[in-house]
Length: 310
Image (cartoon, rainbow, N blue to C red; front, side, top):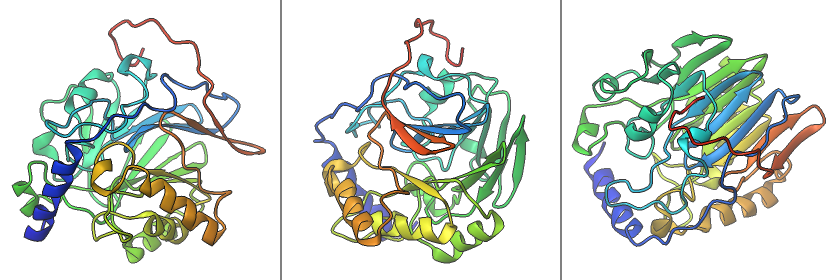
């Protein structure tokens, strides 16, 4: 990480400390359609519960509030006990807002955990029995799932200074039941990287792409803005996109409502409104045979047992 990048994080932290919490659109787990082959719940920030066929994957699980002194703008939409058993958990990088140890410890130890190669020192204390680092283009199997780490453009480390020597960050392509999902994690725009992802994995059904934080109207080397995200979406060749990594943290730094507003403006200019679904936190996107739908309908809450993944 360059010194100017490290210095640039300071105003994000300071401005976020005065964030006013806003509730998620849905509290609890929305009802799924078991006949649909693919669904996704945006729990908030970069946390998405995916179902491909009968296989479940959770991305960058973070159900916590504060990041030490940085408050969360919109709380997570579910509690740990409401999340069904997930076959795999994928971590894009080890920053506090993506690699949240309390949330990971609340999940089942029988869920396989994957993280970028180089993140081993940070993952030692976790409770999952299978904890596996993946280097770029390396794949792993879990049940019917194939999970492949793919390159993105971000920065590593966890505590600031360690970003100078730690390069552990990645995206993933997740495959099962003839479906493909691209999870970009956190990234800036790097067309050559994402073009190769699309060439190696043609026919991606759904892309989860970050659209914030940024200041002004431009993204930067490590964070895509809405226009960058749409270019990534086009280059990677996905059918549908769900934007992530906004309305969770850092809203007061760049403007809580700005990413969604800029995305809507870009979609109107580019005519992509029927392929990009800007969910509200807690909503579920379902890909049915007759096309995608978004639902807020809640399923019956299970009893709180204190055990996640049951």
